Image 1 (tube, rainbow, N blue to C red):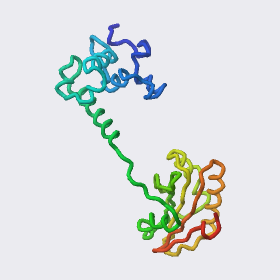
Image 2: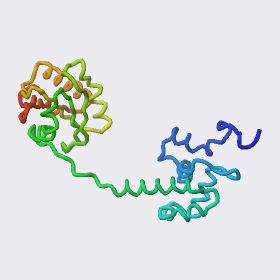
Image 3: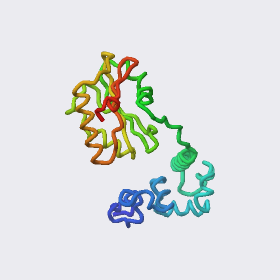
Image 4: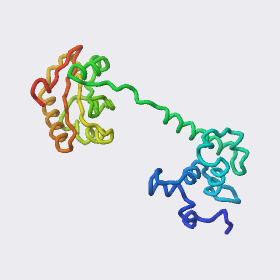
Length: 229
């Protein structure tokens, strides 16, 4: 058996950075291990982690690597154009993420604010759409998601789907909304049942259901204002 056919399980764990990332998370990997993952493979003469270490030594760490050119990278033994391109792409993604600034979020202070946020896209829909707005502690919209499309039914609008996304987004509260294709936003008994079911579930996990808006044609009804929340 040749050296190149050694099974992965026979390679020391420190030489398997991808496995380390899966077990421990990216933040627990060294710069050398992260670079080794980007490089993907070493050469016949050295392992990928050794190649990564040599790359770091060449550039005296990450600071100078950040400004590396394709020519500088490919001048290093073991790094061809494919590996160099992967490194430069990762560096550029990191730069762009660092430069990102959060966009100004829409703040909901009243039922009218919530209705304004969804009215234009919902008032002309031919089917009922049930959506949720996930809010932070300042009542700013973190995310908007359509939970389901179809006639509103308490057995269909499952709290699991609503609050799974709320937890994922670290939402402090939610506002639900659905449209009536007829244009009449008068709430039905199903609307009220769904609202109360979601409210009860929200109380148990600490995510408040602030309102449920029924959207009609340029008009809406707030179940909060109607006393159902």
